[in-house]
Length: 264
Image (cartoon, rainbow, N blue to C red; front, side):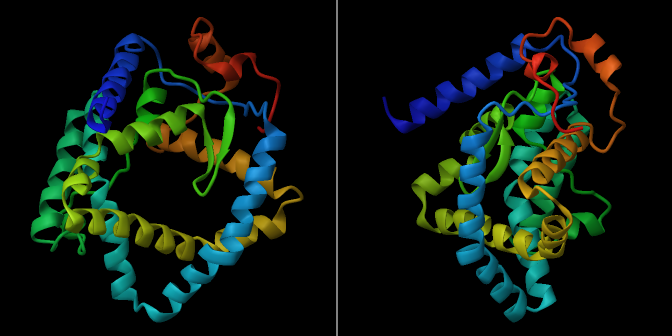
């Protein structure tokens, strides 16, 4: 079985999950289920070492030599690469208006915005909104599952890790990169550039969290859960435990309802 067949099967499986979950309510992750914490802490420490040795110096070098217009272009280009996935996931979530908006952003920024290096769409009044398959699964009630720390990628959970893989397989640029060296260079180069830009822009927040936390691992774990709850609801209010438990009492995928108490 070739790689394209595997991708097709994975995408089909993802759609089957959505169909099975179509009648559920959005997941609300009130606690963190971290059954492999010792392993996660090892990966967390390894990621920290990679950050100190490679990512942080590269991000600071990028910040020092790149003028602000270049930084803006790198960020815009990286975001534009994700617009097809934003549109697909918005459509999966039953939000055709947002799907159209993301598609419009991609067309406008890829043409008038010169391959996405300029965020013309925002100037035209089409705001950016990130959507991923992890959010899509949560939209249909799939709970976070066990907390995971991924090599390089960092904080995640079983649901969002599934989302990362699914988004990669569904992204048209993934297929384009297989058939064109130029597309591959732009796609993977954009991801690296976006990672450097994000590390540079968030450096102050990262350092502040490290200095203010007695346990940086636990603080990052809690912050990740809160962030994901926010993006799943597109910034909307989070329900309390009693409301969430009532909604998810009969939903087997929501591991947190049966998990030991964790970060609040």
